Amino acid sequence: MAKKVKAEERRRRAPKGHFVVYVGNEMKRFVIPTYFLKIPIFQQLLDEAAEEYGYNYQLGILLPCNESSFINLIAFLKKHY
Image (cartoon, rainbow, N blue to C red):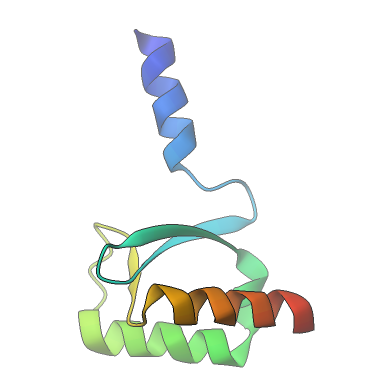
């Protein structure tokens, strides 16, 4: 039983060098590399999230955009940074 709990916990944790954000109405989970935190456009998105949702991260970091826009942003950032 303890092994099952640990396996479930590992699936929910982001790998080293990454963090988790939730996007869209259905709060889809994305695992993001930490180097994104240095990119100004991503910093702006985090600032907007803090403005809209505050700093209560009990559920995780919620980003104020729709899923398809976020996927496009991720693809752009991975390609250009």
